[in-house]
Length: 553
Image (cartoon, rainbow, N blue to C red; front, side, top):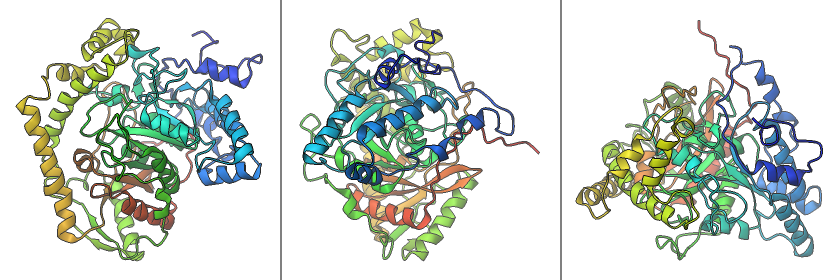
């Protein structure tokens, strides 16, 4: 590999920071994570740099206060994060969480610093570095590829609505994060966090373990303190699972709260972007900037979004709340996650919540097959529409083109697993087919009125809870993911909100607790999640070790 473009190579002495950012913005395919000895030493030591990082675990509010006081600038903050990415993402632990770095980031930060000096900050995100999942369009010098070599070099004609909202709020888009290629909708044997462009992303708590879900790179990068906050996308679990396994707060909003326009899709009936952050407060700030009505996405409406979700941050927010424990299907997957959840339940009671345990969630698990059927139909339709809109210079223009590209470039595009899901989707017909219409109606009925809404009505609940997922599994490029189950599907299929919050650890790996509920109940869920976070303070920064170093008896 040419050292001029090898992301693991040291920065040449003759390059300044802006030139280095421009060089690395190209993004390249990288090898799978390397090993270490069984005790987790060796390369682990190189990654244990967290405690010495000047911005370690700093919140949006703390960064904003420093800029207001003149102690830091947006430029200096961006430079610190870029240095950390250089040292830990492309060298050292080699997390491989980032695909592109924005060659304009420091110039943008400099302009925002001048704007602050001249007239003050636009709001809480002014000058704050944000990373976006690489399926969110940005009309700049970065590509948008969903991690696929088939879209390598593709630059969007305009920003996604979410990206535009963040720029208007004064955020600096620092770069594009690695992801499970095509948002993990390519193969039945995929490895979460692997893409043809970026290679295998690791978990910052143990780099040889999975970051889970398709927003893997965003989760790993934000958790590893490579940026202040990040944006992922979810169809079913791809915000909340990487957030949980990487020790983050993740918010999967109600369908229609955040625009889907300009995001490479899987399925319009479930897709949404969502905040990923190290605290509930930061996630709430980011959600307020992202939400809003978009004429290009008619499902969004002005009466559904709010500009400031931080008003719901109440440390006493659990007092008087009624919370149901959704044990069926969502417990019993992994004993470690269950144990963390049981401790959390006792804490909820101690903080004044009435806990209805159990609260059976009707029909949970009854729509798994029909959900997949809906996703196959919508993926073909929605992806074809997105690719057709890229224009004649784009490398591919349809799902059929992507399949053909992958076949023609099998050694690079499919070295570990194939494209079985894409092949299944390509066989589906239009969205007028009765099989699709019936499946979608079935899913909405069982997950909404006869599912989440029914359980909450019966017990007069503010929210339902369950473990988000089990601890991160060891990456396995031969057999694919070893996902042990979780709680994302009911809210995902219903299009209802879901928040995960760090709740504890198993073998040093984070476990999240999920709060989910009715459509557009984000204010209530944020209030409960914040109070729970304040009561536990469970998150601690990862040390980017290569492995847990567990020994067999």
